Amino acid sequence: MNFEAQRQHIVELCIHLSLRGYFAGTGGNIMLRIDAEHVAVTPSAMDYFAMGPADVCVLRLSNLEKVSGDQTPTVEASLHAQVLRARPDVGCSIHTHQPVASACALLGRELAVPPEFRATLGTRVPVAGYAPSGSSWLSSKLARQITSDVNAYLMLNHGILCCGRDSAGAMQAVDDLERLASAHLRLRIAERAALDPALGPALWRVTDALDRITHS
Ligand SMILES: [Zn+2]
Image (cartoon, rainbow, N blue to C red):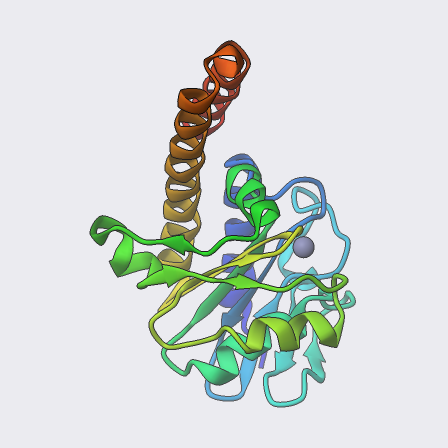
């Protein structure tokens, strides 16, 4: 049971997410379903550009016991496991601190999802309450929000989690959530500028920064 292809796939996903600016440093992690019993996860605190397939951990989904891998699994393994256990239709879960959606996670408000994003994000983007990274408290707060019609979650004052039928679906959800979050922030900035025109120049500088982040 080597699961070489799935390990290599995780390495490639991490590099892609790092190049997109969604993984910064060692922040962010992935769980990929291998079969009915096993999942592959990113290792804890590792530079993704230095990571190789042997560093990816294979765990038993039921109890998160390590089956193979040279490193310690991500501290967020239980967070992802909540999603994959509750959603047999989900093959991949990604947690990031991507800049724009994480800004929305600071606001702590659920996002409505327009029709063009529902195939990837689901019907809405709820907020899971804050708890320290890697804690069972955090994974239980996320677990309370998991439903079969939601593929994207804001994690209060922390980041986001997206899932999909496979890695392509989860990656698309990560991208779409960043676009949705950008549109949401733009709308709120425009509303604020309309209420207080004196703030306009400062607020439009924020809009310019959003443009640079989401179109880079
Ligand atoms: Zn995190």
